[in-house]
Amino acid sequence: MTEVKRKVRLTTTQSVLDGAKPVAEGFPMREWAIVIHLLDEKGNEVPANCFDKVTYKLHPTFQNPNRVIKRPPFKLSEQGWGEFDMEIVLHSADKGGDHTIKHDLHFQQPKYDITTTI
Image 1 (cartoon, one colour):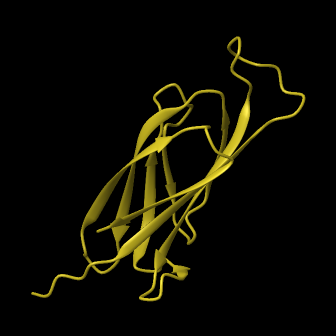
Image 2 (cartoon, rainbow, N blue to C red):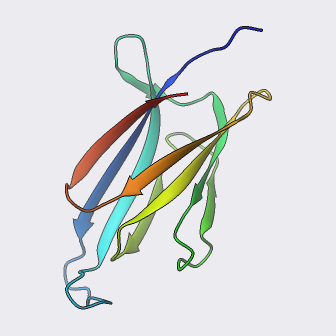
């Protein structure tokens, strides 16, 4: 059986929510989002159609911390004040198995990309 390697790019964007009261002192409320693409052989982003769905495993303090998104670009949008590590499970189409990526949600940059090979 041939093993296929794919480059997956996670793009995270975040910004401070204007006018929202901080939940914790010194930690402003933010809106953030993550999208998932594949990279082609030239490094261009293409739709990640090889996945049936993506499960985001958020911090347990979130209401419904396991979020399932079923359409590319598998965008998850949320609001919160804290940084945390999460697991993102990519569910391959056609019985290709599941791939888990560890993701560090942080607020040091307004936008950042993480590229990994699965």
